[in-house]
Length: 246
Image (cartoon, rainbow, N blue to C red; front, side, top):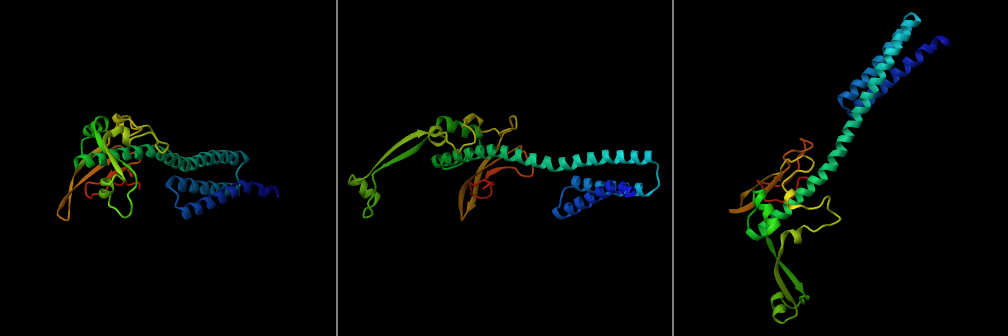
């Protein structure tokens, strides 16, 4: 029985390598994972061969020590091949929440700008100045219009009233709320969060639809955390104002 003990470690190592290879192929793991799995298998196979060959005890111990170190380093590489992508994805989700919040704020400001001036602006300076110093029309309704009357008739009869005035863009559109990821600061509107000063690319123009020139705008993350997935709101090719995360 004792002569078979030398095959336990090599056998287990080889089996682990086979299991890792099967799992890697079936789940389409990355290259680092597959390399580690193959190394496990080869280390086990070499250990089996070394056990079969009549080598001295010292040589077998030396081979075993080298293989243990190899397996440990490859196990760490496999662990990192799984850990690093998970950490990257977690960091991406955390950062992108703030990027999306900033893009939503840009969209809110652009929509208010268009409501007042009938066009979007491609200048971030103009947009920030609009938010800080401009105002928008606000209509407050009092009363309820009966089903039998139009709103104009209800106003004439004094059943309802409308109070029209202008309110600050910043105070009316960017109130603090529980659904916000970060506090609103007009001067920060131009900056991409977590980039150390990178600015959003902002552009505006028009596109023709049914013979009519329709205003459009587009704001894009100029320095995305994941270059394969830059965040954007609006479009210069289509009169839409949704973000690509929606």
